[in-house]
Length: 120
Image (tube, rainbow, N blue to C red; front, side):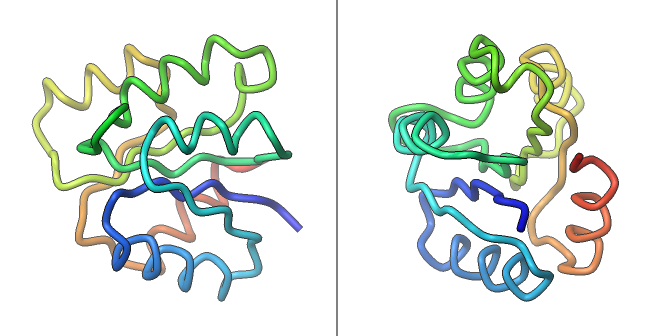
C-alpha cells in the first residue's frame, strides 16, 4: 500500500484529505506543519507528500526545499494543496521542487486523479 504524507495545520482539512486518500486505498500519515512532516518523512517510507502552503514553523515551499535536499526525496512527488493561486506562488513552488499545485477547496476525484498520475 502506498503511503502519503498529508501536511496541514488545519485539523479539519487533514481529516478531509485523510478520508479521501484512505478511501482510495492509500495509507495516510498526518503531520501538523512542515517541521512535523520533516520528522515523519524521515522516520518512514513515504511515496508522496501533499502539503499545505501556509503553515506555522515551516511552510509548504520550505518543506519542499528541505525534502528535496534529502537523497530519498529527490524524486518523490510533492504536491502543494493550498488556497494560494497566484502565478508567483506557483513559480516559487516549482523552483523549490514541487511536482504540482492544487487549489483548495479540492475536488476529491481530481485529487485522486492527480495523485495516481504522479505517484510511482
